[in-house]
Length: 319
Ligand code: DP6
Image 1 (cartoon, helix red, strand yellow):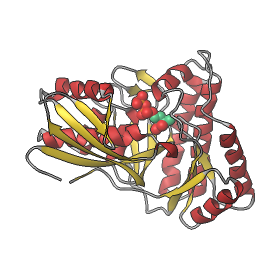
Image 2 (cartoon, protein in one colour):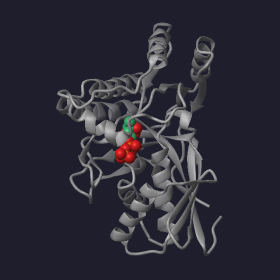
Image 3 (cartoon, rainbow, N blue to C red):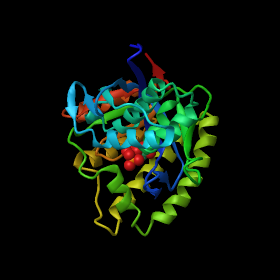
Image 4 (tube, helix red, strand yellow):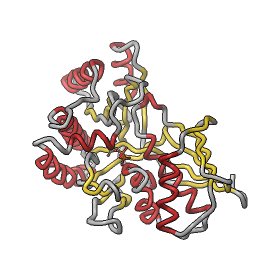
């Protein structure tokens, strides 16, 4: 609803095929690598901001400790000039159990709603740059389909852009393995991963994988897209296991079992590659024709796991 007192923006979440997993500058949230993602249709955050007497946050009708949001609003005030305290009312349609970063859609929607509220005339890239200070993955949630967050060199040039590809029949099978809140936050996980002796090699490899991923997307080679995404994700998780500062893993036994089945699916001729983020859930990259078959195959083997199918989604919008 748009009226004089408030503004509403909708941002869809995104899943990284080439991951952001490390900060070159934690304060400015500059990443060590560029990353590439697909925005998803099925999961989104709708956020309304209204003038209030102090900053506050409500998610799905429940009051939250809005510290992170308040800090982010203060960064926006420093960057763009002062604005009144805001009540932030969010409807989050990113099920926690899907293991998708709700911070991506949340901070993208919040940035867009605040910009609209203040009548800031900003491009999507400028919004992306601002959203970066709230959460890195949010940079990529302004764009439809694929987006690349170019790591840049400083605050001014680190933001995402749309990456236009030929129309691809891509789909993800989202395996909702665990609904528990993640035990190691992304920021803490990254900090620890960066102490791995393999970290510098991962940064180099990631740049090569991104270059190859762009080619694979341009040539609509989904098999290659999947291979690259899986290799990049597994290498990211290897950094967690080899961190010298309190090594850890997000995987649990079901993660390992699903990963085995992804291999089995490939042996049977399916297009199926896995990617995982800061949690135990597995997202399987496939095409739209095979997604329901893969879902049925896995549902038969994992009675307790729920499966969703996700497809490419739109960029930011306003109500
Ligand atoms: C594994 O964007 O949640 O999902 O910038 O600290 O808020 P902060 O991190 P966040 O990290 C997402 C990490 C990831 C990979 C990715 O989305 O690129």
